[in-house]
Length: 399
Ligand code: SF4
View 1: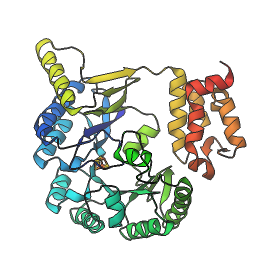
View 2: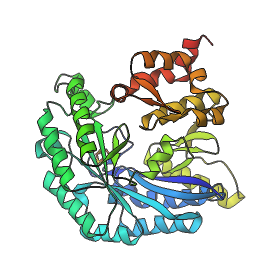
View 3: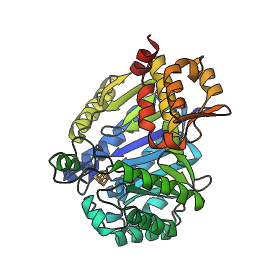
View 4: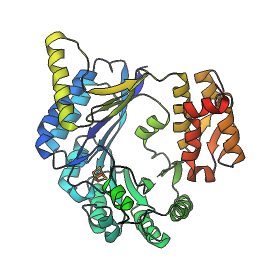
């Protein structure tokens, strides 16, 4: 049985850059699109020999705005994946979409290409909040996009939302989520707004032009969200993700379970063959580097993959920290037996000081074989995670 592999394809282009966004995404780079698609096709070919012993179980087109990619380009990319990689027959194929540009015709084309899961960035169902976020669509446009996706045959939909917006009372978030529930998506991702360095929002907040989001309001909204979605039949399986039974995002579960994935495209990250690495962020430099790697491969049959910006082979301490930090994001938590099987040591032995401290603070708990965050721990997860980083846990244990 071949080892499973998740494939991520990054499309970095957007119509406009949202003020809060720190993803590797760019507006006004349309002139790069043809070269970028060609580079992706070459990168898929460059990696295919290394992935020969794997079977691809999930493919995820993320961005950026993958729904901006033309159907012709999507046809070429999906055909190259099918041709060069072995795919599980029930593979999950997800595409992230911006409701501002989705048409019924495009959605039907995507469905015909085998895309079977759509993740729509709705973010809010209030027009004033969407404007504050610099989104290019209205609430009505987002609802139309969901209806169009259903009509095109997508029966596995995720809707993305952001709560904890600046000056957003609880009732406004409740209205957004209630309207979303009327659409009965199979999956919901709800993230608290964060002000990331380097974004336009960060600049506005640091200059005092906008107030910072209020974390106490966001915490109230999060707790209400957990109760409301539970009552509506959604199971929370990760800090920010809820699904109807059996509709969890299989691709993202690969990340949280620290399983292998290969990222293609500008800035895409990979965890493959025991190594972590990332591609060059800038799309023009990524294209040049892939084409140089491709030319070298054609000429010599080998050579380095020049699009890789940097990487590392995680040592045991890093792999243990990864398994804990990623695994604790899941509500099921980390299996003590599996952890010991994998690393030859229990989580308690590897992270004794951090686990003891956060248990005492009521942020971590043991339930049977599993170590997991408590309800309070879900709110303060980053405080737990920071203590699990290798340098922190080494300092705390004096090693
Ligand atoms: S559409 Fe998405 S990826 Fe593009 S700028 Fe906005 S938030 Fe970022």
